[in-house]
Amino acid sequence: MTPMSLKTGMASKPHHPINPINNTSGRAVGILIALVLVLALAGGGGFLAYDKYFKKEPLRSKLASVKVKGELIRFTHDRVSTSLYRNMVLLDDILVMMDTELDRLKRIGKKFPNQGGIVASQTEDLKAARERMAKVLTDVNVTLEKMYVTWLVNRSEGTGQIRSQKGTLTRQLADAIRGEAVLIGRIRTNPEAAS
Image (tube, rainbow, N blue to C red; front, side, top):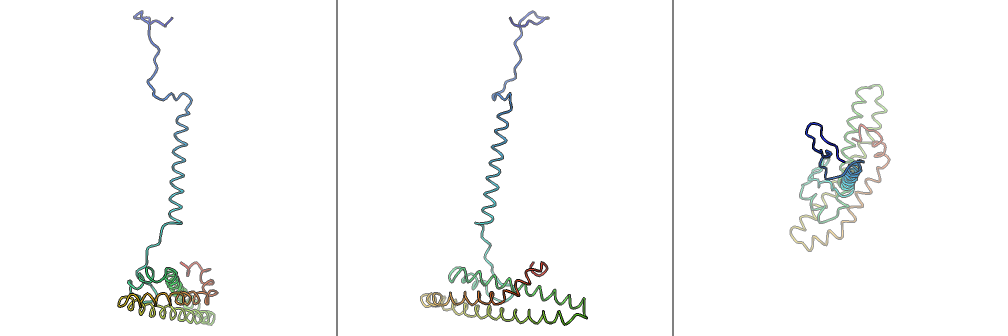
């Protein structure tokens, strides 16, 4: 028998809300939340992988420590060697880091004038190393500029120069960096200079 309404004497139907998903135990909501979390983790992981492994640093158009035409930097990257380009950029970054360290040493020298001998010896070593590295970078850039102009005038001759000299130029920059590795390591341990 169905329950009867006292006022009308008619049978009343049980009241059930219309619910297309029967969610009495909360299982569907749990599955939906788990699915959203899995998708969020996959999206975040994909972004991190892209950012770390696939995202390329924009090509530099100039170097901070020496004057080089932007088209020469692009030529080095696109036509000569990406390794040579990376060594140029790394050496430029090291020279900028050395300039920052020289400024820091000057500030220390002014702050503690009685300890000038300690600061002066470090400054002299750093200046000498910076000059050696800057000379190597400048010499490589002069060679690259000659190579670039030759390539613009006569592609086949320029391509021959590129093939014959790109390894030598890359090694010159790498050797300059390796030659000052101890000094560079000391500077990099100082957070003020390495930034």
